[in-house]
Each structure stands twice: as structure tokens, then as C-alpha cells.
Length: 172
Length: 339
Image 1 (cartoon, helix red, strand yellow):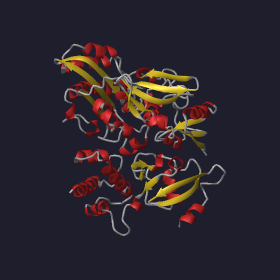
Image 2 (tube, chains in turn green, orange):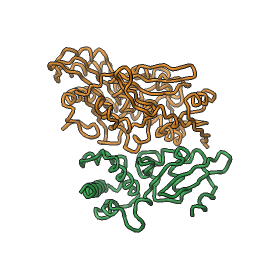
Image 3 (cartoon, rainbow over the protein chains, first blue to last red):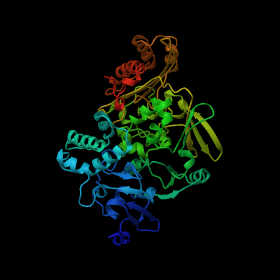
Image 4 (cartoon, chains in turn brown, blue):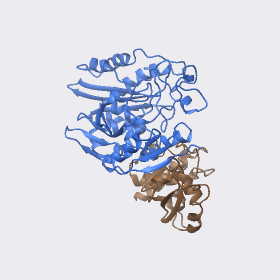
């Protein structure tokens, strides 16, 4: 699949301005030829064929495109693929351990933390990175730290419940 | 299509050479505002010069004057959570963390925060007139949807506000901006960095086109004992301020010996009135005195219909925040009013 992707030069590498970019996504190295204006989000989805990361607003207002880049949660729609050459990226596809769900994914299911599911990959990547940052302890702090991930179904209360449960279990 | 070329640089002179030889070149650091403006067809760079390789500008360190130097390329998150910022300049830390979202703060640079554009709806709508985007085309905000707009320092041509939280704290801290150009280096006092719209609203600040922000220095006084940042907005988090206030205060024997009050969300630049700060010196930190200062700060304020509420809201926010500064531990996540 990797070779097929890297040789797929349509859309993004139509002229000599295309730049070679290496992205280490979910521990697999992806070699891309992209035009400079291709967002990291489009590179992941269209080149990497990893469509778990969602394009919501494409303007940094919703958080659906959140990925973990070099250990930090960022918005993949507001960064260019060329700016992230050689970066380590984790998307929702890299969260589970094979067929075994990550405990936060399990908590999302148990707490009914989504309806349509469109914001869920961003919510989960964001929450995992947030807990790594270690700056949120109380429920109020978690809510504040997760405010960059909108849920238009209104599952926010259950999302915070799921995160708090995972966080508490993790600390046990 | 709105295309551009892209180059990485690894030393400042290279960066400055690339920008000074090309009028349509832009520096890019975090890109969280520039890429968005480009997508909306509001920014039209022909070349992006990626300055993330300028590692010297990522550091945060104590300077020889007892202050702190914040590299222009340090991210907002790394700055807000830096041990020395948290300890010595908690006002700045709180203000940064009240802005944007964790994801954006992880990408956004300190230099970029100073250069973010207004969030005026008409500026963002490429199909509407806007003197800031297209000088001479008019300002629909004056008689339009202006709930988020300015009440102080406005002009006939523009009533946009500068949206930063970080910069409101930097104004209260009397930071200094360090810039570099092919002609050398210079320092710009924070109060002179951003500007009022006047009849050239297309200019947000006094940075010249061939200048690169290298860092921001904070004076030794960080108001670590008595400080508060209050941000009032339409939702409790991840929204721009309708009104925000940064207060830093030094108290001795229950009298104010030094105070700085800066307002955000109400003007084209962080708003300070030195006379109001001087008025409070040697006075007790009471609601009455803060209310008198608030009246001085809001003197000349003018609403445009849908933002009239900001005048009274600003006065109350000043009083509330100055009282909160007496009890900094009462602050809540997201710079909400204390309970």
C-alpha cells in the first residue's frame, strides 16, 4: 500500500514545484511528492489514504482534524505537509493496538460519547495528547483543555465523562 | 488558484534576504492564522519562507536586566507552561491559555501572535467592502453587525479590533518587541507596536515589511503576587474576547504602589490609559477607586449600535478584574470571572 501511495502523483504533484516529504505516520514511513500548499490533513487523507482524520471546517474552528505530531496535538488543517517533513504523526488509525481498542476508545463506547462520530477521531487524539501534556486535572480543567474539539451532536458531557473515567483509571 | 512556492531557511540573514528580495514573500512560523487567511483568499503569498529552522529564536531565557526573553518562535504553549513564565509572569501564562485552543497554542508562535489579523466578519468576507483588506472600499461594520467591534480608538475607516489575549498581558507587562532587518536590529515598546486604524487601517502594526520579529522581552516586574486576566465572551472557551482585562498590581500596606491595566477586544490595539494607572497609585484597592479608574479608561468610548453594551461591560470588567487581582488564586480555567 505504501508503494502505491507514494507513486500516486495525481492532484498534488502536477508540476516541478512538488516537494519530497517524508511523514512517519503511525510508525509507517510515507514518501510523498506534494505541492507546497497541500495541508497536512489533505496529505494524510488523500495521499496516505488514512481517512480516519476528518475534515470538518478546514479553518481551525472545530478540531475534527486533530492529530498528534511529534508528541503535540495540532490541527492538521492549519499546517502544511511540507512544514512537517520527517515528523512523527499519530492519527486515529494508530491509537488502537491492532484489533484491541485503546481504553479511551472503549470508554467512548461505554459512555455513549458520540452520535454521528465525525468529531470522534479528533476528540480521541486530542484527549490522549492532553493527558500526556498533564495540564488538566479537574473536570473543569479537562473541559477547558478540550474546548478546541467541538461536537455538534452535543455529546460533550459524555465525552468528558469518558475522558475522566480513562484518566482516573490510568492514574490508579 | 492561489499558489505559492515554499522555502525553508536555517539562518536569520538568509530569511531576511529572501523576504527583502520578494515583495510577495511571507514568513511562516506556526501558520495558524496565515494558512487560514490564505484559504479564505485574503492572503496571497507568492513565496512562503519557513522560519521554523531558526532555533535561536525558540529559546526562553533570563536576560541581563533581570527580565525574561521570549523567543519569537517559541510556541504559545511552551511559553505559557514555561517554569519561569508561570512563576514570574503568571499574568502572561493565564492570558495565553485563555486564547485559542490547546491545538492552536501548540503550533502558534509568539511572534505570530503579535501579527494575527482582526476577526472582523467583513474583513473575513472577501465579497464585502473592507478598508483594511481593500483600502478605500468602505467599512460595512460601522452600520452593520458590529457586536464584536471597537469602542475606543476607532476611525471613520475602520472599527476592527485586535483579537489577541497574549498581547493584552504583554501590554500590561510593558514588554519590548525585538526585530531584525537587513539594516540591523531595533526594539519597539509594546505600546508602539500595534497601531490605531486612522486612515490607513490596512496597517495593523508598525513592523516594517523587511523586518523579522526575533523575540519579546519582559521587564523584571512580573506582578506575580497580584495579577488577573479576565476574558468575557459568548461562550466560556474557544471564542474571541468581547472584552478582556489584564491587571498587574503591586501593593504595599494595602496601598497600590504600581498598577497596569490593559484591555482587549475593544480597540485596534491593546488599550491602556496611563493617567488611570497613575490615578490609582497610593490609593487603596477598593471597588470605588477601580470604578473611577474604569471611567477614565473608557473616556471617549463610542458604540456603533450592536456593541454599545461593551462600554458598561468594560467598566465592570475592569473593576471585577482588579478585585480578582487581589486574590489571584480565585482564577478559574479559561479566564472566567471568579465565583
